[in-house]
Image (tube, rainbow, N blue to C red; front, side, top):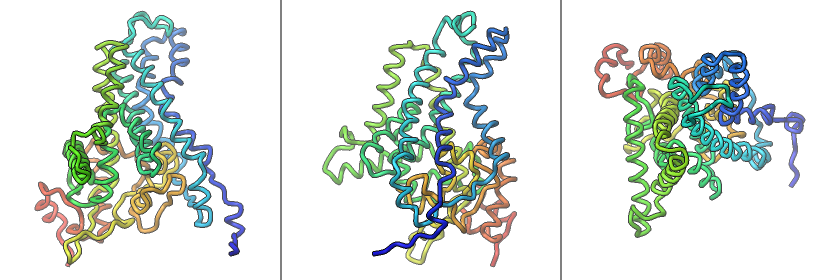
Length: 403
């Protein structure tokens, strides 16, 4: 059999091939700032230098949005003819694997800096101040939250090694049950009222956060219990992937607390909550208000590109391994990030995910930005949206219906 290759395909290159290494900025940021902190302290700027320990929030809320604004959308999709070669290029998976050692090196570094009583080598008289410690904990949480997305990429794959690496990556933020719920829960129920990780029209992020956290945990446990019962095993069997994922978190933080002492506990709590809240803010914006319609047989229509909010802004995509090409991800969950494509028919956000995370915390601004986009997506018929029950009557009264 002869395969013809178009001239365009023959010369096609992934322009982002080496740019994917920028994803390592998040797990190395703490290491990268220390020489700058030392230099500032030598210059007598001890107070100003402590702002750098807030590098995680600065990266998420300031630097990435500005870079998205500067560089805009990507616009490059791989052609069909190169998909198999691109999918099998192991370089791309190594880009995600290498995140993990840097992640844990930074966690250990953060634990040391948080608990050290003498940082004279860095130019401080004594320990870090509490404002610096809080910034440090949030920065550790930011690398853990971005790490959840790295775990998401590996957790969808069929290779056993990648599935275990996914759980190892999730251990930092104590969110190991995400491995189960996302793959077997969210991808089945996405864009329906039954999915705790699909935000509803009119639902604030602060309402969504506990609903998603608690609902996802409960769903993960139920899914694993059902799987084990089919194998005639107890839900408490060691092969329960929720339990063994949580066990990794217990071992990790027990060892770190044994080494650095109980003074580490505030960092553990702050980084875990902030880390998984970053994931949940992304969950919130990925499917806000979108709804799969019910068919005559009572089942939901299959998931299509219309059921995920997308963005092709290149910078955030580099940090999140094309997560913003979310419709293609739901259509092809095992497809590797480098082959995900921007799909026609998908609703698009006005900017990258990083630009919008902060807005999810501010319900009036979020609704001003997004509610009219949901309405336009459904051609003015708000009854087709996934509406928060608490505000349903008010929403229908305000927007009316389309016959």
